Length: 261
Image (cartoon, rainbow, N blue to C red; front, top):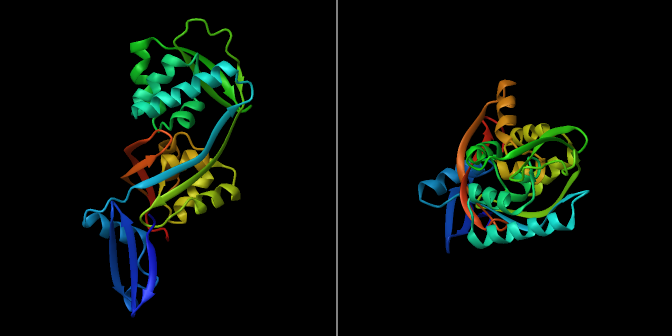
């Protein structure tokens, strides 16, 4: 449940309900007014053993491909159901997809399976399973790959056109919702520019924010480019949960050092 703020009795009061209990933190108003940032609150909560996890409640999530056959649609539905049933981790989700779908693309894997390190995961199974690969184009401009356990890839299209639509609630103890990320996505089209704007606004950004709202599949690469351009970006870890994979895991979270919150 998000953290709530109140002003009362010459104090600023912060109330968080998590892990089945209510936590109340009070600061003198003359010290707290406008000075208690989300990062300070998270440090306090972490220091007393309260997790600063992020909960992504996915109410609608639909990745479509213009030429997708009913067979592929059914295969992906079965994969998602099996992953949820097994509460499969990232590599296991990839293995389930490769075993049950005729072919998978480098564009769709991060979005369909919420994978944050797709190239590394593919590398971990490529030699073991002798994956076959075909180079293709996504959305008319991006180059990528198709992977399959099948030997004959001649029937696979040369181009794919994807569209993602979603409705997702973001819940964490500091009270940051999906709204600021959605607003940035509406403001600019470039994924990397969206990331830059979010970091400069003092927002924490995980790979899942990158996927859900910024269209970023390899956030570490974009963070590296921003660092080379002079932005001071720190990396830590946070626990996340989403009800699409139905799993808890730890992922990197990026913040801009010295940027306002």
